[in-house]
Length: 144
Image 1: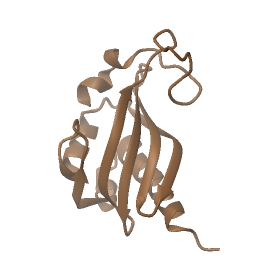
Image 2: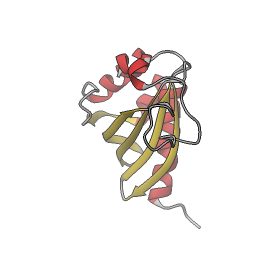
Image 3: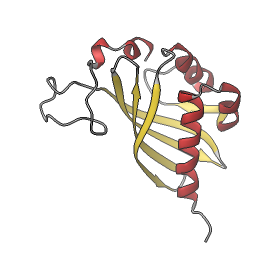
Image 4: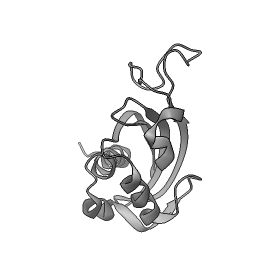
């Protein structure tokens, strides 16, 4: 049975985000992000170079993890956590538009992760564990 476009795009998103955010392999990431990449985020400079510059500014121990991934047509949406070694994190919903195996366009909604003490729901925003620090104390917030 052949793999659907949606399944291929979900796998590509995981591969691409791991390559860029976890491995910081910019040469390989250039093959996955279009030179004409369109960035809609208000906190990320335009284009592929803006995104890569942001990642270069992150602390070296920043890590990307994913949760739920949904796809329809050329669009993939992923619930993500960008965490730093001190326990602080950003929780993000990333939306990517892809074409022919290349990232073409990006939107996101970003929120600082909170500790259990700060949470009104008393449930983690991502996964099943609590970060040690809140977003406002995070080293990620200054790069983001």
